[in-house]
Length: 412
Image (tube, rainbow, N blue to C red; front, side):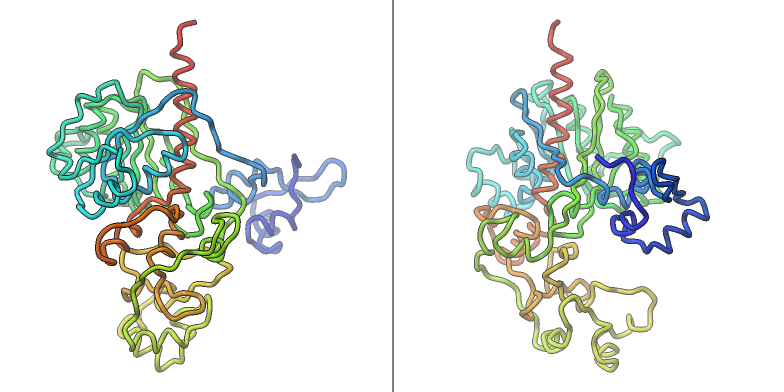
């Protein structure tokens, strides 16, 4: 593998102009070095790795996170939704032995697709998981981001009562798995000026888990998902275990909307036909004027002002408003309601929101995974899900960790 990267190669990898890189070199922000043989200014690859937002660009093409399970690994999933995380873990070889979800339509979806899954429908507060103590390898949960009441400098489990993170921590404490995985939005990093996340780390510490730091935000586009979605992945390791967890390595290839909806590397057929929401006439008339990859600023000025209302005069790009996605780019993050104002994701060629099956493809659900309920319920389930391919890559990291842990635990 090449040890050095030229300025031209670094420019392409990082998406920055050569002039910018030369300025960074002069300022010492990203200093270049002299290549021993040619004496040209170049970069060491490990230098570029220090720039987290650029990391995906310097991963070799042939990398794979795939790890084969060396045992039968099981998980309990809380706040399971329509199964995005569970399906991804299943693809990585991890079996879900119990899934809790309060939404009845999401539960119907889980049961329809996996009749053998143990779906626990209802409020997580009403379920006891002590029977799984030391019998399950992983507890996962996409708990909501809620503020805590701080009784003192060190937040304890009791201080988090009434929040759903408390329930996540309670179940982890009841089950005592080797590893627990929390999933959330990127905003958790800054929620309550970072105190909410610190509180969660403090609680996991109290119940016997060390959190892998820094807590990572994974970009779905780096993990075979044709969507600009980000998910915070919090990993807790039981304190008696001295095995390092490594987050999945990002892939270099970025998939686009065309990869999601058309036959190709991601899917072996074009997207199936399905029902979908429609824009009201006044919105369709506006979006008809927006070109592919365009948004509200591509409209005539008078229509911009009419469509945006007071938002027209506020700061910020608001690039998600009146947005038509291009075939050759990943989709913007899907929402739970595809036709709502301010988060339009219009089809590249037809003036309409994405259909249910198109939504599912963008989240990398298999075509055979069916969603229950009215169309609004289906969009909500898909929009809230963890992308399946992202979950699979996280699953491989979990498998890698568990393989190492159980191999160390075997008698010599």
